[in-house]
Amino acid sequence: MGAVELLNDPSSLYKAATVDNVDLSDTDLVITVRRALTNVQAGESDLYDELVGVMHIKESADADAVAQLETVLKALLGSVAYIDIVHHKKLLSSIFGMNLWDHRPNVMDALVNLIISLAATSGKYLDSCLHMLVSNFLPPPWVIKKLSHPRVSNKKREVLSRVHAALLKISYLVPLTPSRLVPLLSLKLPKIHKKDHLILIYVENLLKLENSLIGQVGGSAILNVVMERLRDLDLEIGWDDIQQEDSSRGMFDMELEDAVEGTMNEGDELPGGPLNEDMSGGQIVSELLDKLMVISFEHLESCQNDGRLNQVFEILFESFENYILNTYRSKVSQFLIFYACSLDPENCGVKFANKLMDIFLSSKKPRPTRMSAVAYLASYLARGKFLPVSLVATILERLVDECANYCRTCNDDIRPEAHQIFYSGCQAIMYVLCFRMKSILDVPRLRSQLAPLESILMHKLNPLMVCLPSVVAEFLRQAKAGGLFIVSDSFIFDDLLESELSRAFGGCERLDTFFPFDPCLLKTSNNGYISRNFISWSMVRATYDEDEEDDDDAEVIVNGDEDSDEEDEADLDYSMNKMSITPKHSFKNTMEKERLLRMPSRIRPSTSPESL
Image (cartoon, rainbow, N blue to C red; front, side):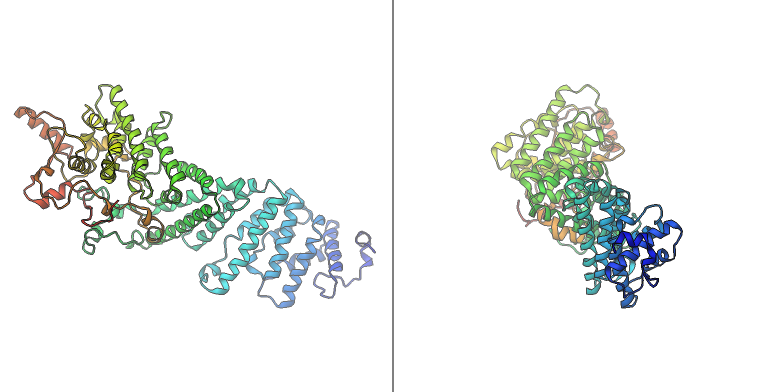
């Protein structure tokens, strides 16, 4: 007798046919399950309720109960066409509420096959099937607590491998799956207050999806989700506990020589470690962010090994532009694209520099975005150890030409806030040259590309007066020692690292003090991935000898009028003191001179650095 006849004549089945009857054959059980599904529509729910009850059996149940669950799931797989979204809500809710982490491999396989069949059979179940699978990216608390145990680690592999296999198969059977899956991935991402391994496991799986066939359709959105969460965690780190708004602290105090001054020797690097170690909350966030960054770095390495880094970089830059570029308090998340560039300097490395340059030059972009782009560009060119000096010089030439053109066309308004783009470009040039001047000046062809710079610095807009004093002081010190140009009149800086003029051009965002690729302070991220690609200040080979005791170094020459009368000098002294640029100190000893002129304020080139 066929299945249809049996369903039309239930009495032909012996009355002892129940779901938990282990003596039933597989075929008989399928028929019994189908009868339960059919009869509930006629008001007979006893067998159906029993069927639903079986769905709640867990791994901890006895062997017979677990075997029964596996068998019933297989019977349901053969009865998918009989499941109705209206009449079988209780059963569907039980199925979609099941968690792979609660079951043994055989039951997992039966459940996953049922989910795949439901997703492929009717579009009505697709979202629920995807939701159920993605939910398994979030293991229960007992897994999080015991991840280091081999048994739990093995369980993790068993569950997650099945989830990914199921998602890929559903994507193959139902082509619209990626478009339905990506919004769900974002929705299920653990909230920002969840600061444990849950988010690590979830991001691991997001990146694994990005590296699969699903990523070919939804990879852009997946990377956006990851980048956004990195940024959110980045912003939770209490940077104020590290960089004080205090004139005695240096612009580059992210390198934190102050914090470890008693334990570091000249030329030593900052020891890696979590930010805000004195605050448990900050330490938790920094350690979590460190691990997430490492997972992301490893993903980029995988992309490179698979020959798809160039493709992923385009998506990564889009995410960077959307989530990082205009986030001025980010401290770490930007290093993801820095590392991508280091993996492929000839392609990704050059693209990043050119894309930032294009944003800076684009009149269609908002002013803060353009200023942020050139700040990123300057920091990148200064810090990227993998960048050839020829590329640095080429980008600098474009910046110099842009600033020179601006000087030729600007109006008579000399207020810094009226020329913010110009000053940000000038400061970027000087900042890069603080790190790269000697290597550029050593090559005559590259040196000639900087020829218009002198006229820019001598222009009435006077960028030397407006840009950050610490940057200008180090730049001029190296320019003088390297013979970059010769100008007249003394220009001496106070030990304050900013002025009212630099604040004016920096705006409320303080883009005059924005150097986004200052040293990465996350221990594993820095030591394992960033430091080998990064130029620290101790590695810079300056044009001057640090041990020189030439008093002329205390005065760097710029344009001006030496013969002003006493009243003019008094007025000038007042205005300069107000701007915190003119020195209140005389260089009576070498230590005082060094304190005022070193770049950055608390960081000096090592006397025996690794030379660039």
